Length: 353
Image (cartoon, rainbow, N blue to C red; front, top):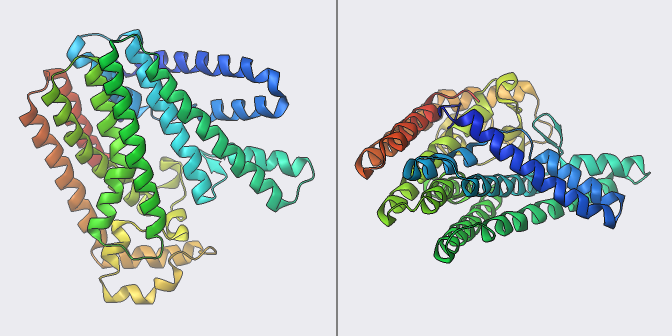
């Protein structure tokens, strides 16, 4: 799973990648009848889906195989649908955050902004072209994910359950994203932030893939329910670790800036806890400053550290992972799934990227 804890990860990832390659090739062929720009849009969408850890497909396939003993063609398609969904969310998230780079390269918005500048557009109009393109690309992949699931060779009742899982995780992710945007500058408390994480990240990144794989594998209803709860614990721990790495990680290892979250004014638990300390007032003006430099970021990190905020978040990560392990042990899942979910929980604590 995370960090290649599954011994089938390489083969499964290759199967998902091959399916996605075919899926994008078919869309690109269709796009040729609609002009060069539309082809460029689909090429950018395809490239946006390349790379990444493939966490969600791995969860789908592991849950499915735990109840069937093998990886089916339909499970690979379902896994690919969750990767399309994830890529769509990333594209929309980049627009919301006004980011033009993803994984060290221009994202969809960035590519079309560059294209716009090359055509002689002003920087404002070029950025508008980029963001509009990213929104449309994300929309296409959201629709595509639903279409893939609707077309699975499975009993009608199973497809309806899967579409319901997909619909619910989109519903919750949108609620979480909207809350995240609304929390900017609002000094949200611990409860608000954890609820946002459960909706925005845990629902579609962990709970839904695990439940979908299990449903396709004809798992008992109680096991599907348990996997939803386990996924919520894992998702919160995973996101909290991301938040810590976003401030205290090593950029060459994480592949992302360690100033970006502070410059953006991202309302994480690190910040919520640090605000409770008197020393926060000395750096509050730097938080969310678009021109924040490394010296200012270092001052913010110092206060976050000295306030005890980082230690509190680390303890919460440990607690959520322990809750996940306890839930796994109670659930009575197949031994292979029990082992891999336990390993994933531990990886959430230890990972550096």
